[in-house]
Image (cartoon, rainbow, N blue to C red; front, side, top):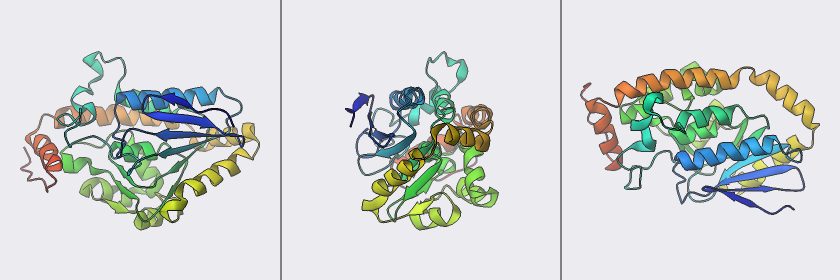
Amino acid sequence: MPEATSKPKLKVALDDDHVATVELTNGDYNFFDMEMLMGLAEAFETLDDTAACRAILLCASGKAFCAGADFQGGKNGANPAGLGNLDKGSGLSGHLYEQAVRLFATKKPIVAAIHGAAIGGGLGLALVADLRVGCPQTRMAANFTQLGIHPGFGLSFTLPRIVGQQSAYDMFYTGRRVTGEEAFAIGLLDQFVDQAEVRPVAQLKAAQIAGAAPQAVMSVRETLRGNFAEAVRNATDRELSEQNWLLRTQDAAEGVRAVSERRAGKFTGN
């Protein structure tokens, strides 16, 4: 088995079954930031150019798959996931949503092992995968309205595509957490197993994909996904525009305070 390599806040290893394991290693909750997302995009693009890789297993160490932004005093505590810097005119060399588009533009099939929480942008990251395996401990939420802002990470395109318009309305409007059981019922998860089996089952599914003819698999994937990356780009343009003005509202400030203080928000519509 080839040796593992390290990138910012993640590990990458390619096994003899032609499956590359990409593991998030950014602490217990795998809060996302630019460094981790850029490293992830670079890893996926490198694997696209690696003939020995035929499928990717996306997984995470720690308690959560990816809990989104850090509201509990980390470096993003006062500015969730750098949301205040999302304006494409800001001159930032690595824009958050540009990394999201890079992830959606890659070619190899991805199976995600969702052993814990996938919240906000973490849910967006989970939906980069083609297939998802979860468990009773899985929690998934598009909690943006609880923060007083618009959904991001391309979720306004990807979530309705997977769960249907009505379930997307419910998740987006309420921002509530969906249990693993419900996630499986509405199609957010493709397999539902015990927590200890999440990664092995996801690994097996990735190995099954890798056992098929690789050029045919990538051809079928391209057919099924069509202009997926371009649609995500268009969605993030709209999401970004809406987030930029909503971030200036009093409700957005209250939403961030409420989440950091672990309480319900007291929104006024201002």
